[in-house]
Image 1 (spheres, rainbow, N blue to C red):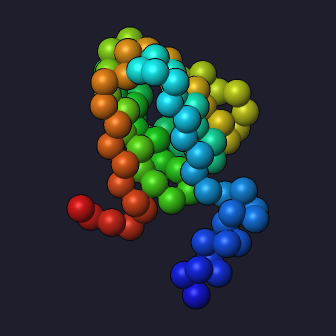
Image 2 (spheres, helix red, strand yellow):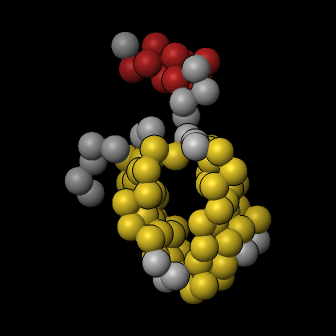
Length: 86
């Protein structure tokens, strides 16, 4: 069942896609909502992850309703799978 769910998400393009360009830009697809936003921390909920971005001078630029580009001095990323408490 898990494999079928994973395949259907891939076919429907619902998987989270993250591309990091050096430490200055992060491109994110399948963003659901921004949970927290300031110039040192941005927390984003995607279809299957909570993504926490730490840095300085952080700014979010929306390219479409589902895509974000984060600019600034990115210093750390934390990923947490949806539904996981650890």
